[in-house]
Length: 50
Image (cartoon, rainbow, N blue to C red; front, side, top):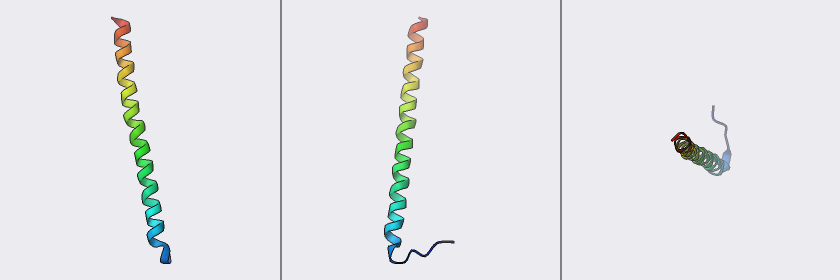
């Protein structure tokens, strides 16, 4: 069930594609940053216990 977008098919498709790419990029940035922060917290805990 694909809607008929007429002469704007390309523009609408590109808008969805760009939006999804930006969303995926933001998720990737947050996941990478969370991993970095987790490593830093583990290192800080290790220094505290030593």
